[in-house]
Length: 343
Image 1 (cartoon, rainbow, N blue to C red):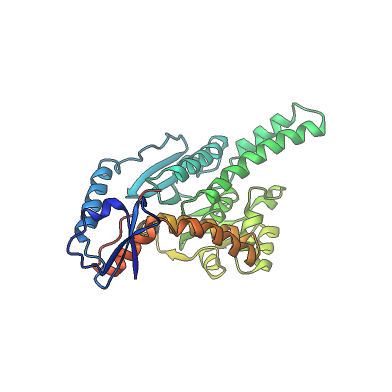
Image 2: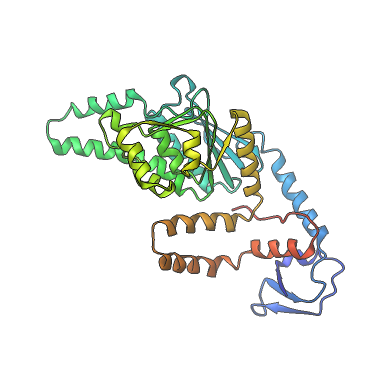
């Protein structure tokens, strides 16, 4: 059995009875490999590192350190490494205006780079999760188009505006951190685009969903038509829902794979979602983020292309200390969770 330890770890290791200790990777390597029957008794090391890490984080988790201030979003940190992004236009039923489009993109891009964030929870304040696109934004599109007579110029305006909306929701999907959507009340139009870009979807039993764009005389263009068929098990049902614009409830959403769990109310929904996020956040961020990257890639490519992709990824990431830390925790059988570096 082989266990790799960073050089700083050795000074904390006590009561080791190795059979053999040798350099790993050359004379000047910063790692060591130890082979033996009693490999690890480094509880002191794990405790010291964990206490140090907790001390550095304690003062920061009352707010969201390093996060920007947003006008349409409320960002908080309910648990270490878990960030909660709440759509915060309750008086407008969280309908998406231009500011919210811009802030969603900014927020998820920022959280993707934030080493203190490992999982993101997405929910809505007030009665609804999301009531779709704000009608005032559609009216502003019409006003902009009225300034031009040439169709090419009108198309240029619409291309820019639609692109902004698409990039906003794609930021949720492209965020390297897993995103859990917690839906209560209504999830309409743009809200469907948001949750289909998320990794995991939970909802309350009174939640309902609607791909409403066809009722407004337009084709959904922000990602719902592209992602929803790959999430739900029935292509026939997806087309029915899209072509008719009818509402469907939590039970139908659960049975057809749009959501994976239904809760009695909003309070239990948030509690369950945070609990899941906390469980994921305790895992190796190298492993979790790599898994999301490869799941998204494989969804859009052949099996062989997916295998080639993960091969290229893991030939690098298997050298991460997260693997060593996980193995150490399992071999020691101490019951203590491994401590992972921020990523």
